[in-house]
Image (cartoon, rainbow, N blue to C red):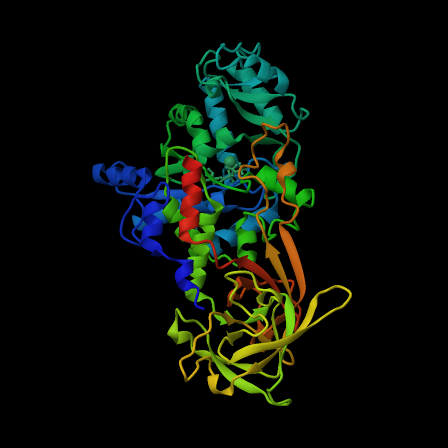
Length: 589
Ligand code: ATP
Ligand code: MG
């Protein structure tokens, strides 16, 4: 049976049109989004002299996840579309949480997704000298001061959304005193946390971000790039907008939580009198049945809920790569979910839909048996082996064909035989005839049962030599086609099956007083040893992706050893578009 129609009954066009946040349109047409519209308008008015320059600014404190992919596709995609540029910039202002390992993984992941920053790989730490000079400039202008309040006191003085803050007693230090103290902060004379440099704005401002925010804190910590040069580090708020300005960014695209910081970024740039990018906020991506916060993902890794950042169950780019997702599938998904001004939740099954759609086109078909059951063909000659021709990919005639050995003893899927078949079960059962894919029609003549366990240990059948290739010359039909592997030729493999990482659609919901780890799915990984695969898979290399007929898409894991491949199931073949649509409707209801 060919599954491709079931797999994609309505085609890409319908999928795109019904994706939340996406404009309906012809298949493959980019969904429009409000950021694109802003850029088009800016190009028309010549706002940035016709330039489009974006950046993707990760903090190297974890691995990238699918939410970052949305931001990457957006920033690099818009630059590509309008003949502009996109930088990769690490916002590495917090040495306590940042590591070279994360920098390396982020570089690898952005590249793997298919994007190119050319020679524009930058680090906020490259700008530490400039930021220091600018801080001195603000002190001289009476717009920044050294404050001796502790972190707790600063919080206390800040006030709340409904009440004004209180001015720091250190707020009115002279410029000279501030310059001297700031210099000594830099020279390492004071312990961590004893002093900060703060912008002097307005402690009664309705936006709490404007209530004298901290620009520098003292941290005697080694930085992964600047080493021990600095013991004061700029806050993200102080570094981010200026980094964009230094790089000449036109459209500084970020997620919604920074909307309230925009007035502060504007204030800094105006106070310095430097080039001013335009910040635009968009809604974060959330996916059902997973978490997309680096802090939470780190917890999963550190507490051993998963095997690492690249565990195939993780929503990280590296996890998805290991699982077998393609960059094209992730990019198509990101394009289709579009960009909105509000945070959105997207079905995990929608991402899987795009993975299936892409793998359907590119994955070679193979036969493999996950839970083997011996099938003996009683009338097949003992020592005969036939090389039968099998199609590599019905979606891609250029993929050609291969030979698969067939012999007297085969393995079939345990699930493909029933002693007493229930209604609508059309696979093998006593007396019943089925087709073995690319081979022959076989009719079940008997079976053996283990007396102790009651388990079927072997099935017997006869074959009809006239049906070679899988068609009966007399035109008779069978209701089922099954995959198989020749026992003498099969290679053993380990196969890892995955389920959702969480049992709840929204594991972030703490309304029952539990944190997200309470909802980790204890059955998210099932390891099958002793799977039997057709011999052409002997040489399969890590990263290669296949469709095992009737079972799903699989990807060779780096844990593979010579002659003993390990496969991850990327995604099953099922989950029709209709089901995904139903799930999306139920969410809305
Ligand atoms: P987290 O909260 O998981 O640590 P973050 O936003 O702090 O994520 P950054 O490294 O600062 O992580 O993110 C880099 C870029 O990716 C930012 O521009 C951020 O807005 C964007 N981004 C992060 N998470 C998402 C998401 N879920 N959806 C869309 N964009 C995101
Ligand atoms: Mg961030």
